[in-house]
Amino acid sequence: MSKKLVAYFSASGVTGKVAKTLASAIHADLFQIEPATPYTDADLNWNDPQSRSSVEMRDKTSRPQVKNKVETMEDYDTIFVGFPIWWYVAPTIINTFLEQYDLTGKKVIPFATSGSSGMGNTNAELRGSCSGALLCEGQRFASSIGADTLKAWADSF
Image 1 (tube, rainbow, N blue to C red):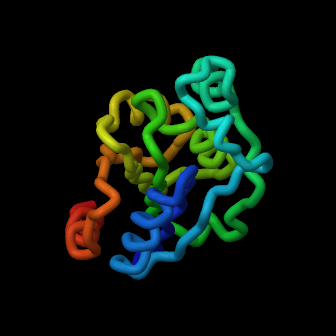
Image 2: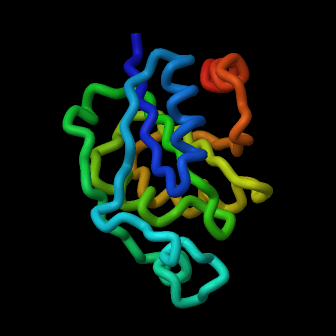
């Protein structure tokens, strides 16, 4: 039986809610990706070109430090990675998270939350950070998504 992990970064709590629902629905372990330096409201102001998130997202090589690490990543076969959509892609902290591990032979499945944006270029931007893994096409979910729908989606992999 494969072992599943739901890892997520949540700036406002929306992605965290979906990740917790998914983990519970598919009986997966749950891991919160935390930035070493937490984001403030000012950092997340996408209308300010000088805000931390704007600066990070303009620089494709940006790799914000992650505070914590999955100690037993080798135990997982399938990793669902959740995040809010920023500028039509995953926040660069997701690249940092993925690049910390040897993902060879693992299945990586992105999922996202957003008020209106789709997945955009997410997979293209994550592909280089998932060396050796099978990067599956992800999906965006509304914050109101139910456990049954998430389980059916996850089971399709």
